[in-house]
Image (tube, rainbow, N blue to C red; front, top):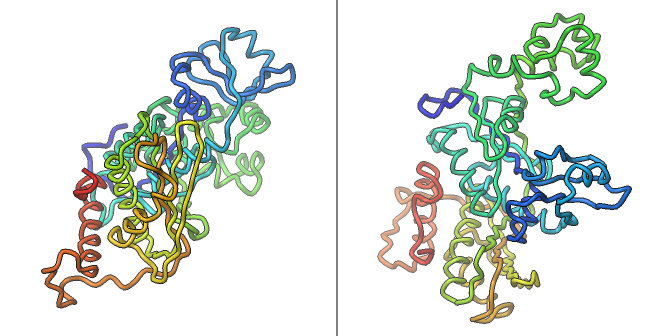
Amino acid sequence: MDAHNDSWHGRAIIHLDLDAFFASVAQLDNPELRGKPVIVGSPSPRGVVTTCSYEARPYGVHSAMSSVRAQKLCPDAIWVRGDFTRYRELSGQVFDLLRAYTPHVVPTSIDEGYGDITPDTAHTEHPTQVAQRIQEDVARLGITCSIGLASNRTVAKIASDYQKPRGLTVIAPGGEAAFLAPLPIRCLGGIGCKTAAKLEHIGVRTLGDLARLDDTDTQAIFGSLGVTMRDRARGIDPREIRTADPAKSVSNEQTFTSDLTTYADVHRTLTAIADKVTTRLRAKGLAGRTVHVKVRSPNFETHGASRTVTAPLDDITELMPIVEELLPQIWSDGQAVRLLGVGVSNFTDGGEQLSFLETDLTCADADDLACQKELSRNIDQIRAKYGPDALKRGAEI
């Protein structure tokens, strides 16, 4: 199932699924919980398990189980309340990471979503390598994910659940049907308990069995969706990765395992964050007039500052002076920092991207804004080909 050494032909779709997300966030924010059975939910008699850590699962605990039953199975479990503000924050960081690799991203819930990483002339890296680097980037946030990589959404979704946790399952184009055939029918989205019972009644227990059904049987079970469901069991799914409504802001945040306290560290990190934000703005063809900076302390107290400028910006040389101006409004040198964030909103369309061949720029002046913008676009091209870490600005090092 590893297509790493083979060329990739056709679409490359990933499904990213965060591993035991709510429980993992609890263990990230409370290191004393790491390695212990953690259950997210209410332990009250009428409570229900939202999710649990992988350490609790060998006891038989699973999501949607009654709390009473979970307590009997795992009496030593540590119960924690859900924190959806924190979940949304970390989820946003994950999908921001994914958008650094492709603009074609569709979150389907707070802890999973799809991305189209199909190779093209500007992005020639093998999809398997891209998926590996996405996994590594997520791990730096302090949580883990499992990824399925395939030629379509159906197979990628099933593959992401194949080797959890921390799994990367690659189904090369042409191998979809063979991968799906032995799997139980409940693996396919849209098949619940009642439908599974109907299928099992006619001897259909695997996706391979479903793939072989004739039109009459598929229509009797699924109605008008019969052909679609059979096609998906065969590994055929033409659905595109359709992005949601145009973004109202582009931002990036970074949470630290060890607090930052010095201006040098904070400035260096803000430069790296601002670089990611402006890279995404240019990739989307956007430029914004409002800049936001966010700082969070170790006790989760959050402060923000913003400024709206006259001319829309999409380059780090324009963004960082504003960030540097806003920072003293919400942070002082020596204060501990748990999280930093930079965002740009209030969009207009990005400006025309001219090349050196179309201009008379000599860039003798390193501070020339037009030259700096051209440099940024060249950096974009190199990163698109060799990865986001291929080049770093001096202020980030």
